[in-house]
Image (cartoon, rainbow, N blue to C red; front, side):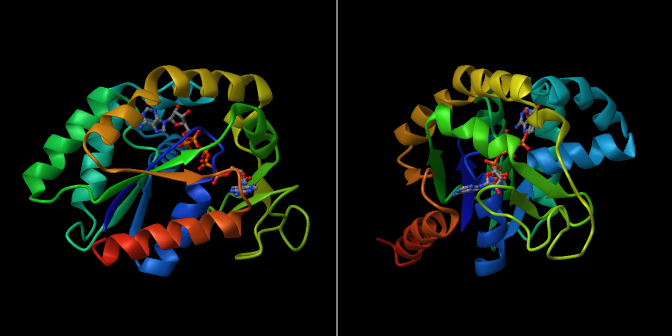
Length: 219
Ligand code: AP5
């Protein structure tokens, strides 16, 4: 099961990728988490990516494509994986097609997390993440048991630098202009499955589960 998660910022891709990873034992690779990790350690990739990430623009295709193809090659890719946030442009999608063809595998399905822009901003400005283990919460919708403390590892929760409202507006514009065309790209390949991402997290998880079960059953 090799799955791509597509959808606007804040649609819940990362939340569901973590749940699917636990439930199905698949490795989830989040391009955003990988870039934030590189920025934190101050690597060459991180230094190149930082100004793009903090302003809500896309990192150049060559930077992210090299990182993600190397990440895929390092997973048990024949068993499966989940890609969250990659590809995000047509050149990235074409590079992914070529890269995984070289590995002798293909994409099983693309899950398009569909959601209106007006609901997205409140989700994102309420997001808090654990700086240590990466668990994701929301002060309104998915709060931790103790305010500002991670349920999983007890570390303090932090807000992402790109979760300010002005940056979110820019990320949404970037998504509509550069990433939304991938919906047609994958629909034309017969791989697209639409998920109603505006539902509560457990309901979204149930939709995803049904879709994966039907794919596994070969329907
Ligand atoms: P990235 O980290 O990938 O950000 P994104 O796509 O903008 O997605 P988000 O992480 O904001 O949202 P999500 O859909 O994962 O939602 P989440 O589950 O957290 O990318 C960041 C930056 O890196 C980009 O702007 C770009 O600069 C760069 N980058 C990354 N990939 C790149 C690429 N391929 N090419 C070029 N540049 C790239 O949920 C959001 C909130 O809502 C949370 O608080 C959560 O608790 C809550 N929530 C989740 N589900 C629900 C629900 N069903 N109901 C209520 N609340 C919910």
